[in-house]
Image (cartoon, rainbow, N blue to C red; front, side, top):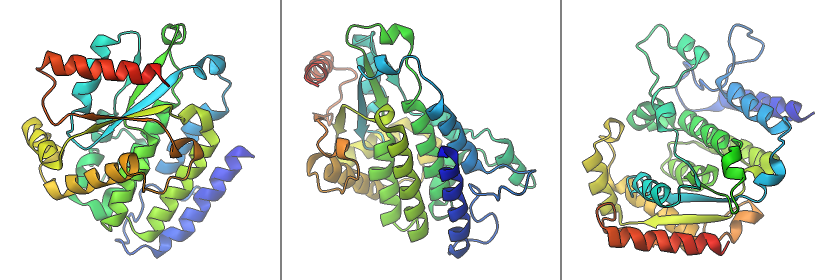
Length: 307
């Protein structure tokens, strides 16, 4: 019954995709008709794996209910990885989950490579999205969101579960995937109306099905100006980001402000509407400033204790 809902959802998407304005060839590599047995839908693979985890019994589910789960949110190149490293050095008993960047840079899928075998390898989905966002935004947001779901529902280790006050910190979440990145791509018209509708449909469906397993208890929002983030982006010189402009970071900054400080973004999940948010100003460097690092650590510790 549970899986049949998903097949109906996927069948509906196969019909709607016919009306897209995009190129006719490989219109949506995420949807290949299930009747063609020699191919497996990229999207179906991702959702199927998630659903198998959802319906599998979890012996530690009661213990995980007691875990405080938070996400670290912020603009591109704001300093999330550096911040998580700072926290992990201080709170070694906590569990930390970073963004699956390498997975986005190297998509390992038999069906994906089969569909592109007559052309040069196209395994860096992040690069494809930045190079041609109108063509690849929906595909990338599908894959990135699925990878975030997998991380958030991953069972915690026994070592973490046996902590007196277990804490798990995620680098971004399934919520920022929707309310920051997918929403921005839609507003920039890189996602069309059908794609945005489909994305919200399956995102809501999965949030409701996984329920507490993807719920957060708090959010840590790292804030720096778009100009500062752009400076840090240029300094780290990630090859996929060469074409990014400061204007894009400005748009993402505004989305974060609307969602986490002004509270003007329409949020569709009750447990996320009044979620506690810790705002940390990281305009100044804290990696090589022990006093600044200590202040951030103490503020996070107090925030987590109060959840």
